[in-house]
Length: 107
Image (cartoon, rainbow, N blue to C red):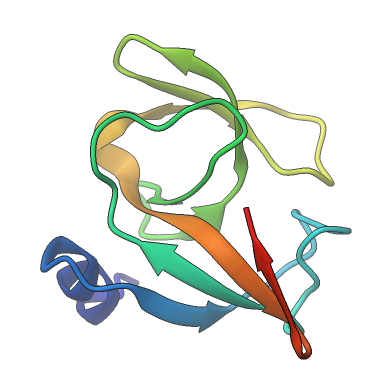
């Protein structure tokens, strides 16, 4: 299922706030405990960035860039071992900071 409002906000240049769901980015981001700030993407992302992308099945995923390729990225969750090739057009936004309780962490 697509979250068109999130994508519309990002396309219009606005940042979005969300809570993480899942354990694929643990221990850095904890399931349903940490709040992330997702910014629009301006240009190419770089190694170790945390893009939010939408797979063709509509599922949103937040994983880390391991390698930058000509037309996309090799991405993997911190708590996963399999890598995924993600084309540029799947990228929806990028996480630039997060909150763990009262602690504000810039990435």
